Length: 123
Picture 1 (cartoon, helix red, strand yellow):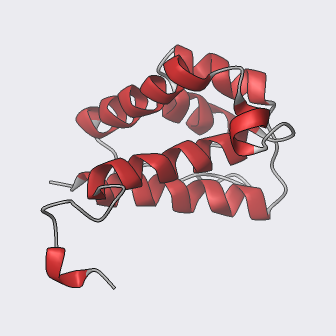
Picture 2 (cartoon, one colour):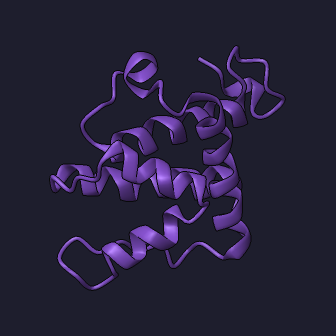
């Protein structure tokens, strides 16, 4: 079993590694895969484990992938086309995935510190 927070933060970590290696995909290309709900599968095909910039999504089972795809798709449905205005992103679709995944973390834990999760751990 993998908690949602573990799945989404592992996804963010893998994307951050790609960004650091100067891997780039267009915002339109990423949007297309968010819409098709195949982001993880697509990235695995583009950057297979064992290759120079290979990703390791082996932690993700079918239900983890579906959850991440659904969450990303909900942001796509509300904000596709507003990436530059809303998040200042226009050059690398990986930045969009990181930004929207960060929003998913906020959704998990409450935007105003009102989540029932770990109330005693707020700073």
